[in-house]
Image (tube, rainbow, N blue to C red; front, top):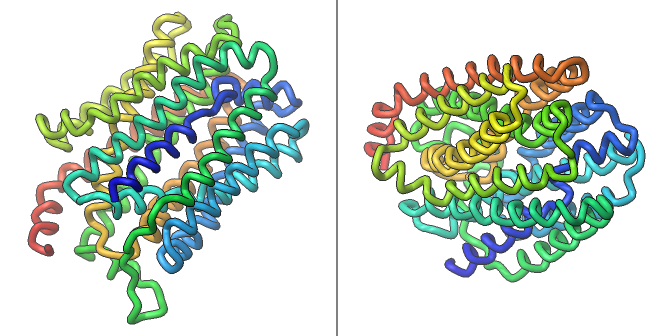
Length: 388
């Protein structure tokens, strides 16, 4: 299955080639969409994934991960093409609908495909590399966007759509993998999909907590940072440089396994999420451009480093129906993320510092939830070992 991993790494790289990414929010504003409406589009995107996530997961477990990903990557390509012609809230809304369906199809299924294409012992390393290749693509596109966006944002979107079209072709050459589905029963049983039924409540806490952390860091590094830097007088044409260095920091995800091997998953994850909390706290009060850049870049790197650990924890407790369970994880996270986006968007329209304050308190809840889960980790790991 080494071929699958290599092809998925290429796909991850091409998925990262979002040449308009550093100015995505600015682009919407230029087309007449307000900040509040832009966050509403993010809210609607998440709601679409909530309603279609589990259906996609069930489809993937029944018909195969490869077919699901081919369809989903094609829809993603279609959404990128549609974005070129968006010039109003309604057109952005249509693009969001297509993108939401495609994102929910990919979400969970790509991770299940990767997990099934490698040995269990190397999964954390594979997830790290997958994230690193994506970050490399985004890093390169962010640097190039400085020159492309200066001429035309539409050209940046066009180049992005080409990369996404190539992904559809690459996915066709992968080999489908074996996936465990409960064939004895037509109905889906959530409890039977876990190696230990008593783990479901603990995992629910972990999924919600990490979703809060992920959504807050994403909202800050991708959206709020654009408003923040614009307010302190930073030229939006050069946003690409900040985004590029942020993605360069994200390459640390490929080395996460080194830290976990040395310090363990628990200590490493605690350090990452606590540091994240500190940097968000600094952003509430600072208007210094150097401090702001350091905070944004650090948040990107820390989030990327946490991703392989979170994915490994989520996957190792699943016995079967992997794509469906991962889709449920994502659906739960998206419900909370959708609510967060509405609140952040409402405050950002008034005063961006209020949004940073809200982000800090929500992040604090997420960090607390992860600490609760990790305090029970030794007991959980013992149960997993006994159940094997």
